[in-house]
Image (cartoon, rainbow, N blue to C red; front, side, top):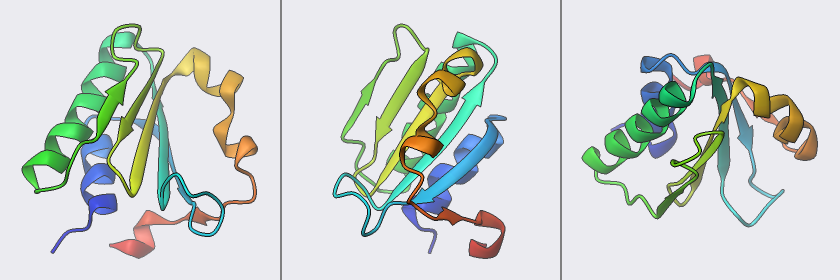
Length: 114
């Protein structure tokens, strides 16, 4: 059985999300167990990645709680409950720098998870 994290990660990877980082938020934040952070080079690709993550999670039986930011497609947040996906436009990712903001959260190596 595929986990929510694996489902979302694969969807992002399949749509060519760039520089995918997974933060283990357990014990760091009550918001979610994991954050997946990536970026794309255009608004259209940001939207496609976010939509794919939501669609694949839903198809696998997981609940998509909400999606925010699709209209501007500069930073789209896909709330899947235990996993929150952040899809940035390349220009915005460095500005918000979530990896540094949540620097105390350990990185998860998805190659090891498979």
